[in-house]
Length: 106
Ligand code: FES
Image (cartoon, rainbow, N blue to C red; front, side, top):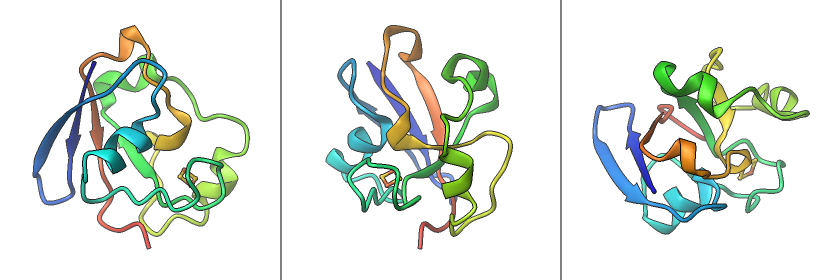
């Protein structure tokens, strides 16, 4: 399954991800700049903050419980499409998803 990351400077990085893999993990494993994932996906750091592309927002779905609390600590502006990328797991309907990355995670 494909994920396209678009960095704050416009750099586009396509990566392949397996079903069930989190978007954070896919980014870190492919050295995508702009995702840190410091806590390893246990919802404790907010360094995996991302903006789901508007066209994909409904398919990806709403924030999980607790995400918005943690996003309050995010380094970059929080928008309606903000998510913690460690909480989004790849599933078939997300093939081709587009994820925008914030300017900073720290
Ligand atoms: Fe830490 Fe997502 S990796 S909250």
